[in-house]
Image (cartoon, helix red, strand yellow):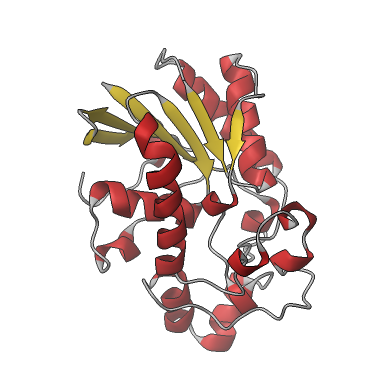
Length: 236
């Protein structure tokens, strides 16, 4: 039996402010740091030897993973960072307040942008300071790979391609991936075989480790470690 632990980063400053974040690189909020430390304690109770550590390029995921590893007393010099595990790009919605946009565009339209499978917001202007082209951490990402906007389908394609190429051959080991709401939703759709219709119902809580058990390279079971903040896993 091997284990894959998926952790959405702890609450970020823009989560707290209810802003669309996407590829913008924001810090964890104080509560997010506490969530990450609690996640580390929950993982520690499993008494697993963790073999591989993956995260996105974004510091809210990196800091979450560092806090988890610090709790586990594991050195963080073997972390593998990948932009393919980044959050979904929210296009022209980036930086805007979710409640304000609901009032402006209607709750139905915002929900469509947030939870639909293949509908993306309007592209973000490439001159915006929030565009990844203008954010230092993405300077080494091939320009043709940097999006102006993304649907969940777009996110799914880049996340699962990376998983198949870089992670799936390691699944007989124990792995932690620290990522984001939509990149983890994409992985859950892939691993749990969730339909395009049902994926809209899947919510990913911040800082709550999702433990996925594998047997013979197939998913056998999945559960959140913090039962009080667990969400429905659709097919489990």
